[in-house]
Length: 350
Image 1: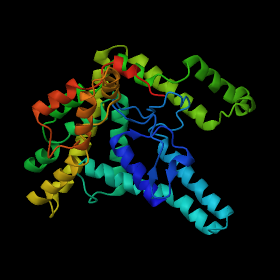
Image 2 (image 1 turned 180 degrees about the vertical axis):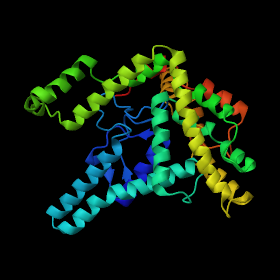
Image 3 (image 1 turned 90 degrees about the horizontal axis):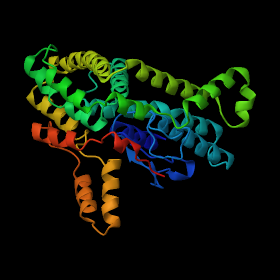
């Protein structure tokens, strides 16, 4: 359970989604197999799933930790039924997954944000939840968003204050965020909105009928969330309104983040070496390159014509995905140029 929890936390930290996280695709060593429709999330969407056949988003980015928890519990139950372990041990395994996962997730995201365990766990989890909400609302590219934060720890440290200039970071986060049209594409559900509304209506008038088709409360809850997100995007009306909303959300979070960084700078261990160590962990936790679906598709198209140069180039880049420190202007410009276009959001895997 502990190994699997750590694996899932590392996946969540870089936006990796397995796609088919069935029980037979997991191993007790904390490893997984059957890498078919996997993907690294580009523009953030908590419902992201690279598997076009997963209409219910059962193994989406947001759902896969709970799926792994269920798989671990089922394995423990099987061992109990085989009398390999007793009921108490099976319960301990099943109940131990989620606390272990939350610890590992907080540890992973603290590293991504150049934070240590100096902060209270509950406060840092709230900061993380606020960050994930801003990412989901703005549709910011996950990889680019974290790289955009890279210079902030040193700026706060140098100023000896949480009151630092945020314009440059905000500008990069805006560049990494989606247009209104792209946001609508990211939020579009697997089923037509009319079908989702019918499911929601039947959950009140005829829940037994839904149960016949395996539609449970979780599916209904997801349908309500998907429609609410679509309605919120439609209500924005224009890119100008979306940018204003995104900027407000990002600025509020950045102020909270800078204040949290200041608690590190205030401590007796926050000397130059400590800051350098935190920056190094940050750089080693935020990839500057991930295998994006539109890049893979372009490489596949060339390879089908006999040109494998692009495949080799992607392989080389995938082997060295991290930068030694904060991204510079040239690196940032190159990263932005490689972000997926709106048309790239139509690429699906099967």
